[in-house]
Image (tube, rainbow, N blue to C red):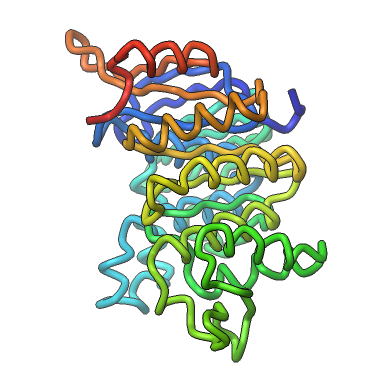
Length: 325
């Protein structure tokens, strides 16, 4: 197990998690379960844990999470979401969170004493107290920690991540993967500061292709950009035809191992889980795991159970009720 991989995590007071613990994570981790059970929130908590290394990266990750959740509202209030007041609201909504793993321990509280408001942070056992009036809302994003929501990445993110592909001279590898998914796609390039694919001898903006192409390019370029880091993918099968899912997982398992990237991904698709398991078996990948999230009917507490490749195959072939439906 690579020393920078999350192996276990403890989440308190973060959105739907009051007090949640899980362990047994590997290099590639697929999270399944019914809708609204907390799969995306779990990934967000892991994202906070590895990204929040100081105040600036903490502000950046909380702001990024909120903006992804508010993507539709951004169309109508783009400037308002960038203001210091709005960012402060996002941060204060996360008051009292605690996310600890074998990698990092992150906690954040707000205290009012005699009319003086202070923010209290802990990162990697370092305690920091800041008066709210002296707080800086400067943000720093860590490049090899990526988060892809169910819409894929924006053009500027894709362009930035594609530079990692170019630095490693892996443009042909990306084109081969794209051509496997759609034989009509010949190459991918950034032209006039826009992601474009060449199809039938003509370059067109990636927005003119299906959602699956954008999602695939987002995933592959993010993998290269996340070398020796982390990649979080929400609804990994979004826009990808079920017949291509095993090929997708094969590429992800191979690249994540080659680039030393820990991956967390969510799905509620039976076909995606089956394809994941087939790729596991073919590649004999023992550092990939499927986790099922659910709620305890009596206590309403969220829990997670780990299934390795053999256990998952057994449940898949014996009609196990493991998937989100």
